[in-house]
Length: 322
Image (cartoon, rainbow, N blue to C red; front, top):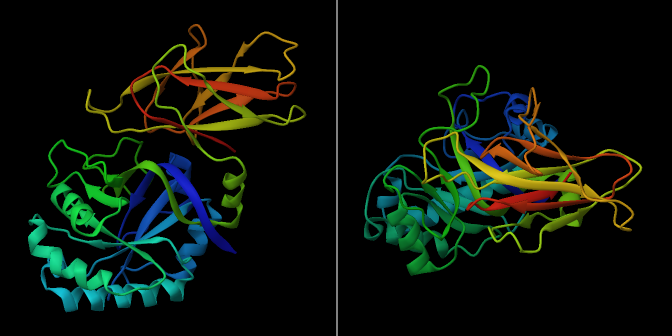
């Protein structure tokens, strides 16, 4: 059984070469973006979707046939959205999720506006959003409304649109997926986004992600509660768009654990970084220097039932109880 779930962090997209789902997750990626098209060898299959979900990965779908298809007018847009909807439904893609239509070339919004107008005329079960450079993302938002676009760094310069929910990088920031280097692109999830997830992702609805954008040392920290009878974990993700330097870029994370009844002083948490071979980060006055984009876990040991987190940098941080 699969369903919608909120996802943050980093994703990848790929076409004909399919990395192993467990290896994708082990590196630290949370989701994948996969294709719908007229080419079955490129498209997501039911079996692949099941394997991705078994690895705990979310799935989003993008329609693309040729790089310039979106320049072919209103009827092309209607035809493509109709075909994409049928393929998505056959896979079991939940209603209400986004299907991105790809503009994989550098053109002005005016060149593809009729295509998206045609596609938007289909009132189906899915939300339509574009994939493309910043001109496409902002043109769509101005003409048809709504955020949630997927922006590619290509044809965008150094600008990131506020209407983008996904940002496809030219250069990945996480270590290469074994056996798959050069076969995929890395995508930063700029805000928590609904994707097609395994049934277990429903637990995220009970413990939703918290956004911590503040650098104010006196601001209220994000607090998570846990079961004091077991070891618990909090997953941390920084927005890895890094205008202040090339990756790896680090940020400060203040993390302490304590007891909700106030019977103890706050204690520095144990923070691990990395997915396949996590390492414990050094603590400097309860602040840990973490690498943006890498898998980070804050451990809450037995006997403690609260963890408080505060972002010490200028970057957006998401936290999620696992």
